[in-house]
Length: 87
Image (cartoon, rainbow, N blue to C red; front, side, top):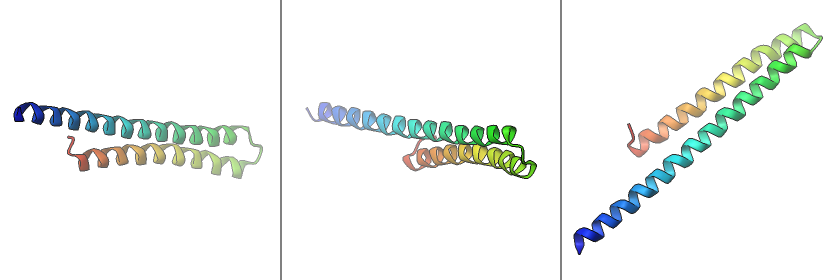
């Protein structure tokens, strides 16, 4: 009986870890999508503005916001996986 209880306990732990991993992946995916959308919005503003200075700022800001947000979300996901013990 003890082996069966241990197997149930390990199975419950594995399911909890899988749920946590999925939740982290969904959160990182949402952050990537939001960051990309914000970057694209700034790029769109840069293309439609008549002011060259504001357009240049919005263009480079859009590139920075989009890429930095995606990179930050993926690094966060990697760090969470490392703390959890996933390789």
